[in-house]
Length: 345
Image (cartoon, rainbow, N blue to C red; front, top):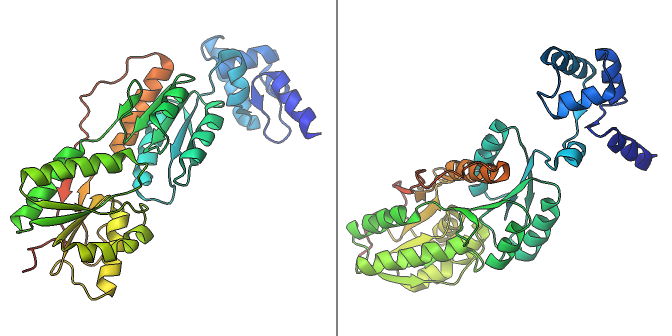
């Protein structure tokens, strides 16, 4: 029975009935042919304006909803865009999702979401599956390889946020500015040996932040000790505490705020004072970064703006419009709170 219903709905060519309502019910109430209903609901402007208003009023009265999948059959468009994130529980993606959702909604698109749970294999498989049902795909801080991303982009429009991939729409915040501010801040407090706790080995952004931090520390004549990568989570941060203590650093820069928060928790529980014994700097300024005690000093990243801009660029590619240029300000800035202070003597 379920299969018969699906076939009937697709046979009508345009919409999913709400409860038992069909396109024929809308046509009967509006006093027009079913084909006229199809044109009015799926391709506005193809019928007389008065008739279209009457049809839409009838559809609203009957609570009849257009099915974008069925609508895609004649048009090739679903008006759906996809977003893939690596970990939906990571607050760093909250604002990315909100920005992407706002841009999609304002353009008349529906956003669907999936996560990869920090697995590059699951990420590619889920992106491939999603690509079949959307007009375009946005990848947020992806873990898969450049080759896999390029392969996806050959099938349909793809954009990437927080990563740079050759020949693929890429929106990357200027992390250099915020890192430079953080290094200057630590140097001004007398820190000459800093530890860096990297994020996932598969993360392009983790490598990017590490490289820029190394450059800035060299310029400032600060010794940088790069530790082993950890998961970009509170648990990952806790696991790095022993290595941080053994590094001899008076300050530590974490790949993201979750690592910094976990690190602070573990250090405090073992009797280390922050910032009296060691200063801690995070990255992203996620929701809750100022809830720690002391509040976390962090490099603020324009997450919502990045999601919005990346989605706008993706939709421009989908519709064939001019893709927005590079004039969009995505600078990072240092937010100084209580977790940093003078170097311990």
